[in-house]
Length: 256
View 1 (tube, one colour):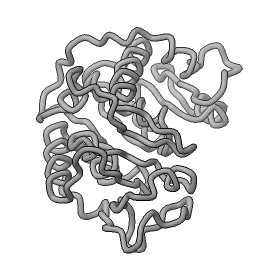
View 2 (view 1 turned 90 degrees about the vertical axis):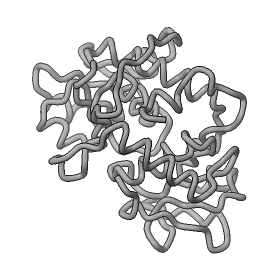
View 3 (view 1 turned 60 degrees about the vertical axis):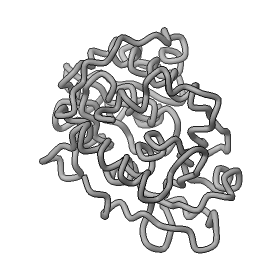
């Protein structure tokens, strides 16, 4: 595997679980990959292309993960930091509907704003759910290369390439045995690239399951024994532990 296109290849679609959303709902690998294609097609309509920048609110929920995967398939550089992305003039910003007014006030003329979780009042703002779920699930073969940037660093000065991110994710999957149906609870903010690599890309590459942390989701994934977070295994939501003495992967230790 060299780029995000590899773990999202059509022939990897299956009925195996791939992601548990905070409401405890389980999504199959087929659903995740197909909806990543639809997300990419939706963002293409917003002008997202190879080399573009996309800002995404670091909300641990399905639409924001799909926006990342879709943007990555298009060859865009994603930063889970809305303010930094606005300052950099990102082509598209994906945020909760409640934040749209603040974002549109700061967005430049070349930045498209996409609202998740509710229909926007502003006709210039795209309604994510309406657009994505009506999109074509067919997706052209990606033209991304391993040296193309995928993730922006926390300080905004550097980027992590597809090759670097996928290589690190594959290594983590091998090191921790993140194979079929093994569940990884993401308790660290998506704003940290190491959390994205270990909590989203490693299960995607290895065939495991990403659990987007919440008490309900972790109840569904009670057998999980891997946590991506700080040393005490807690996250911002302070959800209950998923296992006794789980293995904790610190995002700061992810080699990107």
